[in-house]
Length: 278
Image (cartoon, rainbow, N blue to C red):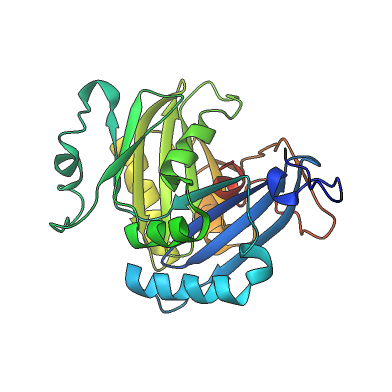
């Protein structure tokens, strides 16, 4: 903790942490005051026409410039999470950092100049191999210096594994975003399946959910399905899922911090990967 010698005041940047989440659809961020243990800012910016990382960089620069009062602060810690479908999980005993392209090439189109990296899932015997937005990492490195980055699926799995295990059987978690969703199937704290799908309609969505359930030979009348992310009970995605799956509910994440009165507190199932990335 640093003190200003002239005023004997604490430098605010010494106790603020910044969490940023980026995708082609937008940028979200939150700031944690570690002294008060409160979220002091939480915002989402949507990018409607971005289709590639270069366009994404332009939109992020415009967002940072339009909100200099927020992003021009210095922070004790900055963490970035990358959202894309260019990722796959590998069991740790089968993993070698010399074979990174081999893990991705069957499910993703890899270009010769793509930078491939990996995260070790801290509370499970898995490694996440993925392609980050390198130009965006470079942008934030120029702005903040050193920072930590992960693929958001790593954060998603690590925190799902930390949720209370209240089911005796197989649990299906569905993380919903604007144009894609992730489905995670867990049994006895072991990962049975992780997959990511892009969708346009609710019919696309439920087709992929039911296809996954069928492939794992699960019973829709017995399994527990939890939603998290950008979905509410009134949404068509929820109602169509409830038509086919008996036990559907939302996760109820308890965060170890509170929210400043100026911040609209999100529901416990939303902003899951953003708020757990400190």
